[in-house]
Image: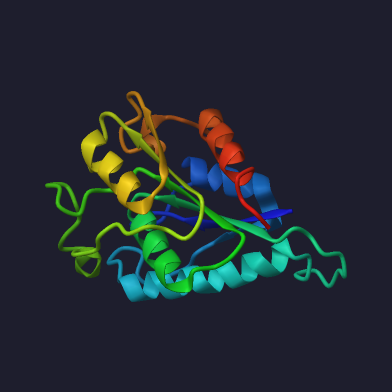
Length: 196
């Protein structure tokens, strides 16, 4: 069994966002982070929220959340979008968990003109460093929050695979992706690379 940690961007993901649709589909196998600072993101708050969600997801992945003695394979996949990608990467660098993978969708460029500097000052100055797990960066060629070149640079620094998609903007609700079947295919491929 695989459990998922949903890590949205600033203000969370609305009900039409692919993250929310995937979460509903996964039911109790998915845990969404719950920071107190959704609209004015504080990095330490978000990282602590990821840790809490990860611990819950790990119990689910190992089959202990519902009192069952069955041992599952214990894989946990982080499903991050936008600013959540940076929070996920920061948490991964510090926690260095086993049996984890990360899908990092539309990471914004902290040096870019559209980055929410005033709303998220604690995210400024973060740099991409090698991640301790399999990961995939998905970016769009017309994302207003980051160029394809910036996304590729982050992927190289994170030692992530990368996939550039065409015409999906910030890969959010406004892109009209619904439950984003192609994204699910990319996720399924990533899950297959995780060692329990």
